[in-house]
Amino acid sequence: MNSHARRIAFAVALAFMPGLEAGAAELKGVQMPDTELVGATSLMLNGMGVRKTLIVKDVYVAGLYVEKSLEPPVKDENKILESKTIKKLDLEFVMYVPGASMRDAWEHGLKRNCREDCNFSEQLKTFKDWMRNFKRGERVGLVFYPAHVEVLINGESKGRLEGAKFSRTLLAVFIGNPPNQELKEGLLKLK
Image 1 (cartoon, one colour):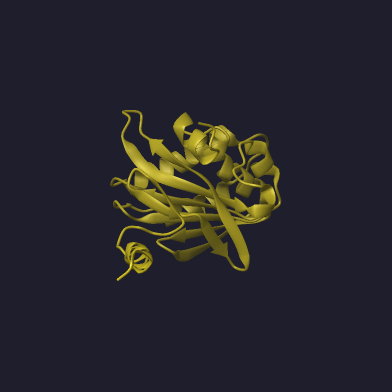
Image 2: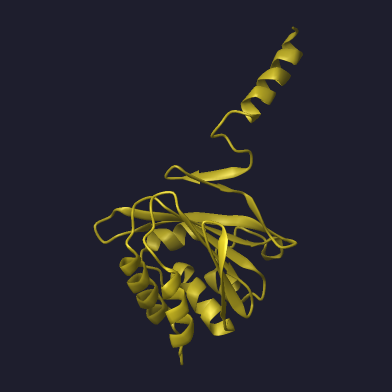
């Protein structure tokens, strides 16, 4: 076998090695693809960040996907939050998290990011009902449309939460006033 044929064989073998996904980013051992398809809309990975607890334990790795028209990576959270485009946030847990902790964190995050007149009691009740104990490796997906959010748990749609203001505020939990600055910095590629 000549050197050119060996290089091709090596490249083909490398492409099919387990754990090496072409076009994927990795953070804390969690891989996320560079692109995601939501319906017919192609989204690009804007950045990845880590949610930490107060005692600096990693809780989950999050990846933020935005439409190509926003020209990722987008470093300005307001450009993303005010955009009428589709966005997606994927969370992969890197530790066990009890459902009660998840429900409390969502409620606190929404309150912290509410700009004015946020009566989300209906959406919050439904959203919290979908939150349960999460094991390492499980995923939550949030697809942000201009007037609602679709919630996925391990790839299965749980349903929609209506409201443009709710959609914007829920996304702001991650890139507006997040629980830890490293999460926002990673998702917006600020560092």
